[in-house]
Image 1 (cartoon, rainbow, N blue to C red):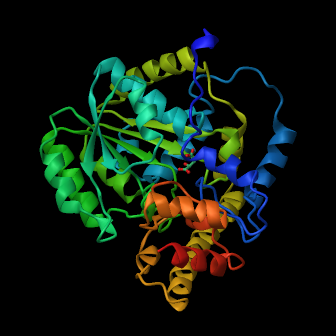
Image 2: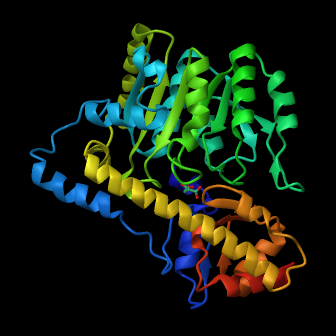
Length: 396
Ligand code: LMR
């Protein structure tokens, strides 16, 4: 079998990390994979999470198999974090969740669930969307269709075009929405736009599948959940894939959640039995460690407050870095206006340069970003911003 196998090109996002690591240039800048970094380029472990790990280590008595949905006190805490403790869908007993191996695990199991009950269903994704959405959803058998989302010239959401396309979607189609901090553009829906999308989904009978991977890094923990909370108030059904990679810094521990809102508590329970059986057929049960840390943080008031402070700190620093990059480009005489970077949310923005210019930044300046010119703003620092801005201006 292996005789016939041809090598694949590197992953468009993760491949950048290895290329960056093997680059000997001391001035190199990594704006590739969406991981948070401090001013020294390190992705730190949250102090609250480290403390949770210390406590968990003392408390943990066994490494025996975990039940398929994971820890019950993880699931209740994550449901409240996502939907808000007083959400009517929670009060009605219509919400369920399971722990999953990262946001990717949640997306894939969710896609398999959809394909089990709606084989070959169409799922609408934003144009552009995160590069891994298509393989994750498509490999489960779903048909991918695109709705227009980002207007490159205006550096913002083309909401009118998005709505026009969604009005043409068929009843029962799935609608993938980025809960906040749109990846790769950083251009988010505002509240009025979320309300309008909710109305279209309700009227046209679309089932939203929300990817919430950056809660707290856009505008605030509650603010960033406005979309899914609104959808879950208005619609009978919702699916949501959650990632704790970024907002708990638990990237390699692979912890996320798949959440469902169903019309009735009985249907919610039935849905979970299928989710568990799908997970059983792929990885049997979720890894426990990350979930143990998240539940320890969320269920202890003091640790939770410390964690929220750390998330606030990350968000504020990202906003500062956005301003630093845009202002430095302006100060150094960039022939274009990059002020849009300040208006966007989360880790990503599209720089708006061509693939050839991205290649030049990589080969001539050792600056690494995704070919689409998506930058991870958290990779900018006071120490590299002038070098970076000069290089961008040089290739414009
Ligand atoms: C990203 O978009 O860079 C991150 O979500 C990392 C990944 O897995 O692609």
